[in-house]
Amino acid sequence: MTSRHCLVIEDDQDIRDLLCMILTGMGFVVHAETTGTAGLRAAGTLDLALITLDLGLPDLSGLDAARGLRTLSKAPILMITAWAEPGDEIDGMAAGADAYLAKPFRPHMLRELVQRLCPPEHHDAPPSRAEDTATGSPA
Ligand code: CA
Image (cartoon, rainbow, N blue to C red; front, side, top):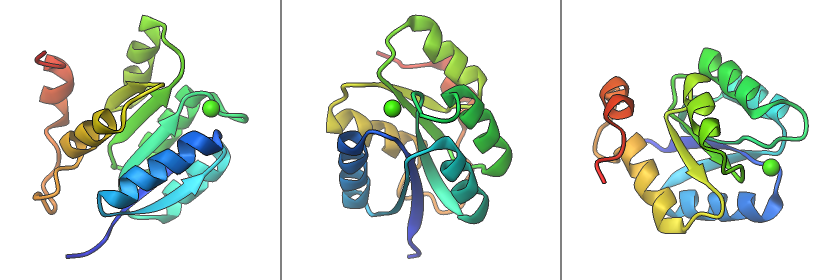
């Protein structure tokens, strides 16, 4: 089984370390970047299974970063943000995010979202992205 690579774009070191630890524990090879520019550069060169994107980055707007990532990679984008305004989630989805997680989050919430975005059993099957985002959370 080949390694699955994941890109973490997050400028907060504590959150970045937590994301890296959880995702590494889930079997991903994790690449971490601290700015949107570096994240976009990495997304253009890596074959990624997943991208986590902080919306509050020092250089780019997270939404601009998401739009850029969408043009560079087919990997699901999990947006992670401290902003709690309801409109942010809609803006994030419109910019190309596949899922959205508000800080502070619990590790199990991250794991569940990641498992839904990239199920470990499916090798090359494309995620049924349209249906998932259209119906939203069943709970
Ligand atoms: Ca941040």
